[in-house]
Image (cartoon, rainbow, N blue to C red; front, side, top):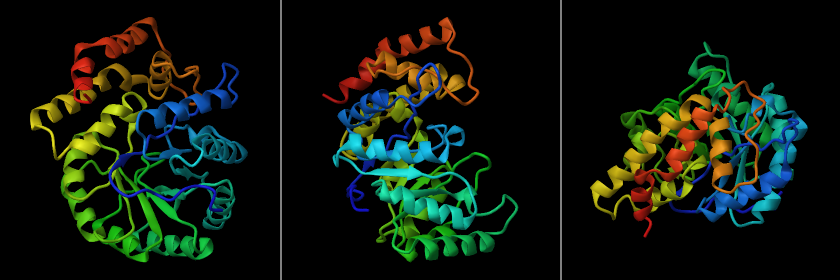
Length: 310
């Protein structure tokens, strides 16, 4: 343990990493190196490996560990790396968390749906999380309201309990509700829990309420614009901020129907040496869809948004 740096202070962007594959479906570690450089070169504060965008459900346990290890290696201490882990019993989650920490992860992110069944109560979930924390001792943990196979949102009351344990230092939030976000940030204020919103429309509101940054799919297209929003949301004219967020929101029309393949194709256009192969069943890149991505790359809205970085 201890090979990776700790979570930084301040706001920032943690891209939900894509997994590059060769055309034969094997992990392409050369492309992974290129991808890590792209994220860091465009201002990422940290990297979230082995998440839903990474197609973790289609990765073997050994591949999850290899992706964690190589991401940490390629990051080279410049940014910390958080990692998700495969599904399993509470004991298996704990055992795997220890193995991932040995690969250099700064934080082991547990999907909230990994702790209890969909119909289980919050008290059952809390009991399972207490057991996991006991089994993992001092390992830094994170939580992620992953929507697959089902989305379990953390209530403000449960979020407060997590924050006060001192064991959770990363949270990726997907509630998409600014009222709930504000409640969560209010009860976790002053703790070590770092709050990263996955929902672009509520991002600025979450930052104004004390959130720490963004961890969503737009960082696989325009991470530099996401970074700019996080770093400048309180200092720039509101109109410039709205224009940038509007551009990113409209971009969803170009890539939303075939993500994460669209992210891989778009990053290839931006110079990342990767294929658009996915193990998950995703719609193909038709010429029309590729053209829409090329249009997105060249459109005036992108140029106008990039002016915000000047």
